[in-house]
Length: 247
Image 1: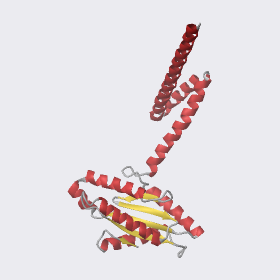
Image 2 (image 1 turned 45 degrees about the vertical axis):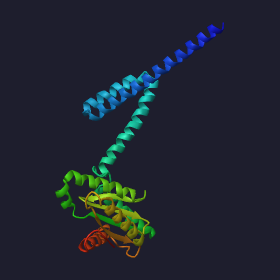
Image 3 (image 1 turned 90 degrees about the vertical axis):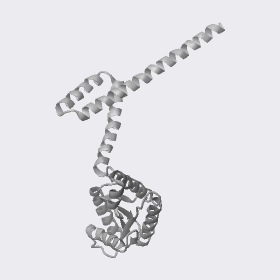
Image 4 (image 1 turned 135 degrees about the vertical axis):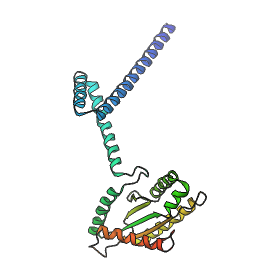
């Protein structure tokens, strides 16, 4: 009797394992099928897309579990696809930072908010010194690596509320909400020193930084005037010998 009981238990264990494997394979194969179907739909023409949708409707019309699985899959996959498209639209491909267009949109929003609630707002314009010379000596691929690395450095020096963007070429912008000019200047100096020390062993890479701030004194300040404050400070930093902060 004891041996028969053990045999039954062993049979049930094997059966449960087998069913588990079948269910796992079913889920995996269904997911792979849906993934392939979604990619085909994304790349298809309008007419082909309609046929694919019609085929999915027929498949799921008489299979409720598959219908639920398909609904969940399309929701999460579509959401991820939308996020990918959004990132491509607002981010710079090389550095991963926001692009110029999105930065200008956020700058306008943050400046209006700062005016309305009388809050401080600062802007850093960061430019790599003699970047053309660096490219000529080390090559453009090395220059791209510097740009990407500086993008990561700026993110590391920023808070979640800050807006960090590649403004254009070798120029970057950091928008700092709730930050007065003195605090922005301290951050800029820390950033300048970090970049200089980071590249001391592999070649001279330094940055010049201009600081502009809004602290409620000029409610009629436009976003163009605000950018000009930081740009003018950046020009002074370059005219003063580069590798320095001006505000």
